[in-house]
Image 1: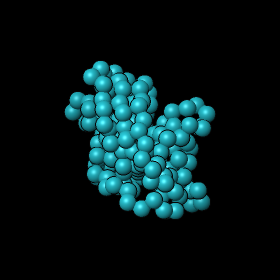
Image 2: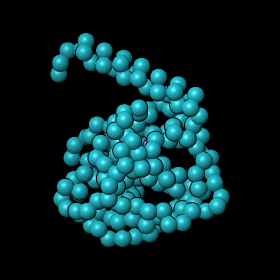
Image 3: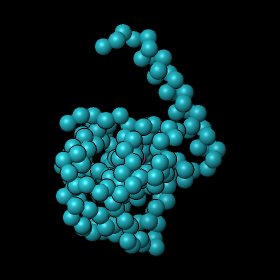
Length: 177
Ligand code: NI
């Protein structure tokens, strides 16, 4: 397994629309296991392939504290949403350190394929439902900050770019390993 690099907002590649997965082969299995390891290492509860610059409809999610409840969603479709909505303070591995309120459907039913290509349906609520909707947005090229006001979004953009420049400076001045 290997760790993958997570794209950081406002990287324009995060706005790429993902294509369906067609081949349920060893490459896909390796990608799923690398994404899972990357998500656990970054202490995230979900990761979409878009975030590691692979523009295919693939998501890994694990909302457990114990890292033993992995959910893999391939070519997911939301087939039902509750009329009720919930506001939750979301974060994202592509926008580190930023948390803000986003409104989502409280419950959803999603249809997806597993890593072997078998179709299944899942009814989700609570954090899992929020997480699935957040990750599915990534596959459409949408980052959660796009739900915020343009003023907030611009502030986040500036902060992210500043941090990126600072990180580059630090890595240039430190000895090569
Ligand atoms: Ni995210």
